[in-house]
Length: 276
Image (tube, rainbow, N blue to C red; front, side):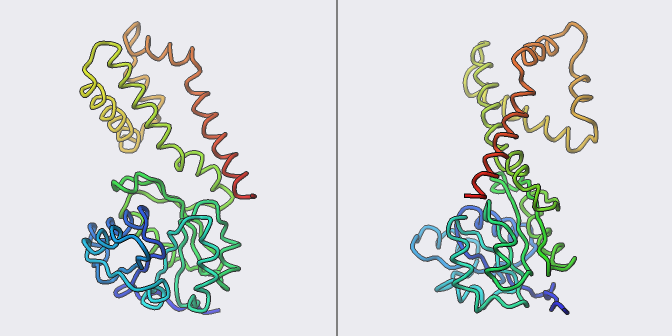
């Protein structure tokens, strides 16, 4: 069946749910110049602080979700996972096949979303919290009635807050375990590095600054150099030097295996939650 193209030059985006993730995406889209703020809308139901945040970006705040859907070509469901199904059902009469639907609700499968909406022009995206500072790692999976152009449109929206990849939805539990939960593992590592610096004699503020910048710089080297992380590690670890002494301690403590186990455990938990 012929799918009505989304008008690239004039399309409007509506957020159902005005929480932190919606704010991050909207802010990124506006600040990148991808869309002017008057082509973005959301509805604020109770919290006046959220209204202030969106209005400060120049984004329209409408009376209710129905108004947002009616005003939009692309509808992004950014409500909590436990309520997204009910929200889709409530709005179903307005969710025509002319609209491209997107969900960022963790653990809610495309199959269920498509059935509730009455059509398959739905894309599921798994973003992560660094989207708030424009460094997100997002993965998307396309529904049965979406087009290549639909996918590229959504990819462009999420590129405004970081990087995005496309993957089969069956991989989303593993994505959750790695990029979804991964920032917390890295926060823990930064805290531990800083504590190590303090133990070695550094002032707390200096230790934390060095730890966070070191992790940021190392991540940038991996993404920009094209070298394997193992090669970059070897480049730093000179024979009989300080770095290999530190790495030896990490290996004795099972550092790599522990990180791998954390990803697998979080992925397994995501799988369990999606079935409950």
